[in-house]
Length: 456
Image (cartoon, rainbow, N blue to C red; front, side, top):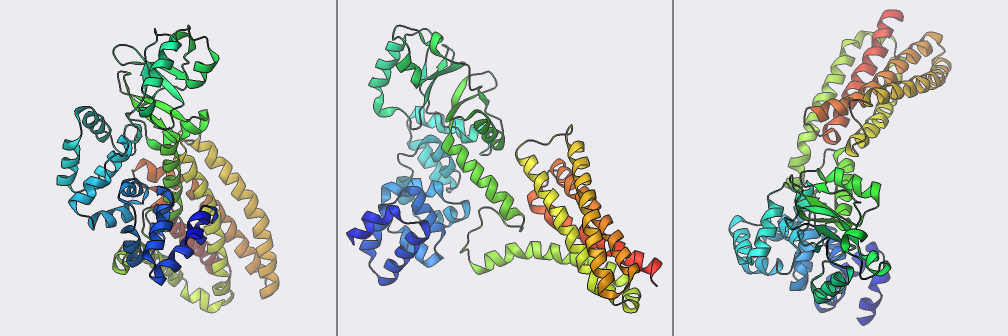
């Protein structure tokens, strides 16, 4: 038993999951508890998300009380909501004890209103005001991400005074503190004092001489993906957050930004399938079926539209059977080309790299890429089709149709996400479905329409 607890840190996530499931299956709950609580909160959260509902409930009951709050914060929204719904009031209040303000803000928003109010009222005035400050901002902004627990100093004091102050509060210095924030008497942000300067500088130097103006303060209303971009561009570990008047509100640390980046990546990946990034892998069957039914219905409508287009040319297809064989080639090539451009454009929007000024340049570049590829692959497909069906006309026909579809796919893939974003619709969720519709309909229309004109 001890051996499992000792070497579990060396295992991969999959090995940990398999080992823990084997222990649970054997009924050795005491051993499972020991193995589980030897892990970090993040590792426990990952294991919980990877287990079916029944085993998840068993495992959750084995988590030590002092770890529950930290684990809940790290779970996806859907899994967290499921576990919270099964906890009583005392368990929920106990789980929030000792959490950092930003983590507590994330958790409080998921709790029933009466319990959330009880937790807020139980805090002392200073912590209550800090929590309410975070809750006053949307969770996808810098204000919603920030932790109000930041160490501040005045510009006129000496570094020796700062060092003595840090020693006095050493047990209360927030984690990931790499810098102190310099503010005036009104609490307005002036700059940053890196901790390394306390070692490099003469203790008699004043803070104003040692501080730096980098990084720039982050407005509390800035969107979280823009915050992530700033951290990437400036290689930040922490950064100050200020209000409209420049007063320091708190700080954002790199661990918060990593969460934003992970969630954004999951959103883009899952969104292409019409799923939420918080989708519980082991959600109840009916819940998952109901959610996915929506996008299946949308896809069915677009499929009927493509089928209707094909039906318009039923007589043409009956006369030239080769068209039925080659139709999927045109639609498939257009779909792939369009999805490549679509993915690139959505990424540019997510990273804040696309604007009205450079969108036109991207569109022209993607059209040029599509033009080159259409020439190359139209020639390849035309040659294969011509040899296959012993017809130069069919080869030429599919070459033209393929060129038209590739060009339109690139145009749509570049323009569609920008239009959806402007309309407030998430391109990651709706873009791929609409793009598929366009490439299928246009591909069939071009191929079969040209066939009706020149082959029949």
